[in-house]
Image (cartoon, rainbow, N blue to C red; front, side, top):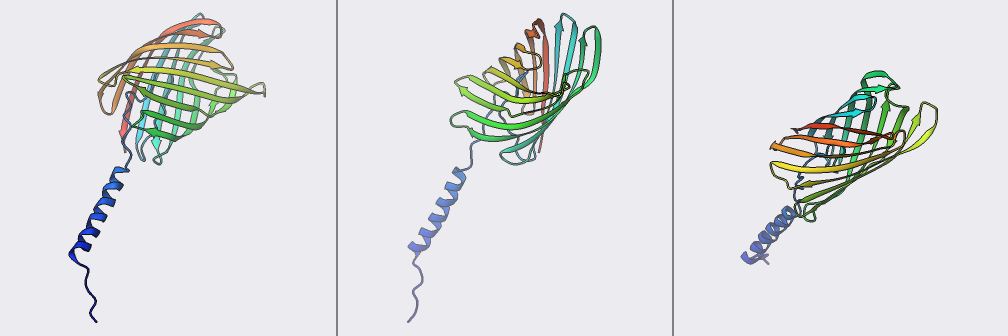
Length: 254
């Protein structure tokens, strides 16, 4: 007996099923999260770089204190390892007055990793966590080294982008003591076009309690560049401070 070959209806059904499966797979591809800005002046956003992508950021903080004018210039780099994981490093150059003595040079080096917990373009919500370790020079800090585990969250609410950072950790001091360290930050960005007004506050509890607020603008002349400038005011170690901050962020691509 001859076997009957499948009819045209069966073949068409198989083709349609394959096409439907391919279409469904394409629909499962996550929508790209659109960030209004990729960093605040004092805190980062939960963004994790795509695999192979590299981002560099140079920031400059100027503070006028009762002891004199101080500068901080951190240079940070991030590289995406996978869809959820990135590695980062930061080197900070500082110029500070302390009890009438001037210190300048590399003040701190930090390395870290960040893991994306959640990122939904549909709800406009992103959440990530990570680990970071840092080493500080004696001329600039009483801490020898420290570790922290930051948690970062971002939420779009209409034209607003709301950012929050909680960074608990500990430091091993030059007095050979282990002490807790906590940093808290909140920020808001308005809109996502060429010019983005923004503001943020940041508090640090530990070696030297500090509170600072920044208001400014970010300009995005292209998809790979962000320029920012703002005014800074706050208190450090009980003394009032004021100053300015600028930043340049570049996406180097993959």
